[in-house]
Image 1 (tube, helix red, strand yellow):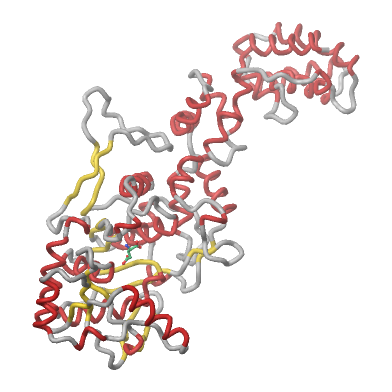
Image 2 (image 1 turned 30 degrees about the vertical axis):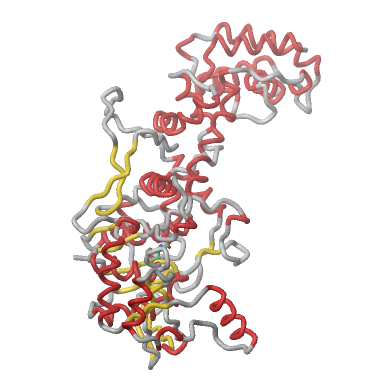
Length: 505
Ligand code: GLU
């Protein structure tokens, strides 16, 4: 069975590049009826962030990239809450618990130290690894000398020459040490990357890497190999920055006599100026997009296309469609450009596809936060702005005028081809006319037809009536059309707002 994994280090948040790696791994597994596993690689204690794991999981679940095995989120049952799943797009987090699922655990590397020790011992016993007692001062000096001589930097193998029995005694006596791999420097490491094709590395350039650090923790290189093997990973999909590590990993697979998984290294994500996508140039954390009110479907659809191209015209993909059509062979070798305008386009499309009720539901956290609300008028109100907003967080500000008329200047009521006097003349008549319209006819189409007939009968120009009407109803220079707003406000509030306008003049 095909099994892929996503193996983040909990250093804070999920990078959009990480979301892409996870998504491709997920899609590949699902497409082939396999499993997607999540492992936490927390062996670098210096870079550990307490909430890191929770943040990553929340982002992945929000995007519906949900692991079948490994570290997962389970909802803690709270009888006081209804079972209805929260369908808002903004992440609600309080009720989640991090757990592990599967038979190959634990799935957090810091809980697997005994396993690494056991496998490190095997290498040591077989003479494929050795203790190294070199001080950091010696290593720094070595590096500086190599750099000065313009030589490739790396460990010089000094401790490999020590007598193993002596080494063992020193280590057991508590002398500070690490364990290193005895790298076979002959020949080349050649492998077939599913994206880049044949890749070759000269083994003489590969360092005797550290396997176990002086704090007893394994290094990434060692733990990743042991875990991918023991967890039954068949396909490793990850960022291109790891490709140069493959010779080290390959050597370990060889020493252990294990089959090496298939590998696919994804090209970098780039800014539109082709520089590497970094925090400095804007948001790179999935959370940032969640908080702004991007819909998960839009972000996933967008991220899927960062490097993958199905080669058709179709751009809108549901997760099911992605699973069906995703193909590693169609992932390009060159970097995917992270173009925020494209993401905005996707978000607008997905917002358009929502019903008013769904839009209200998804935008509820932002509406509540802004104190804008009161159903059922909300559903009508969002219909005014749904085509104009890009992200959900813009919605409260956009529809606020429905609930509370903003203060505006009397001048705004006067259309450019009209005059103060004319507006003063027209508004009372318009109020009188609206008074005669039946509540049952108060919908935008009927109202528009009737009003236009009335305008023609009176001999007014359309602009000199509709402009002040629109400003009076919205309190804004730019707004949706007057009849749409009138319908949402209903008859009484429409007339009230026209009266307020009249008083201003
Ligand atoms: N822990 C590594 C990371 O943070 C995983 C690399 C891999 O997938 O092998 O990206």
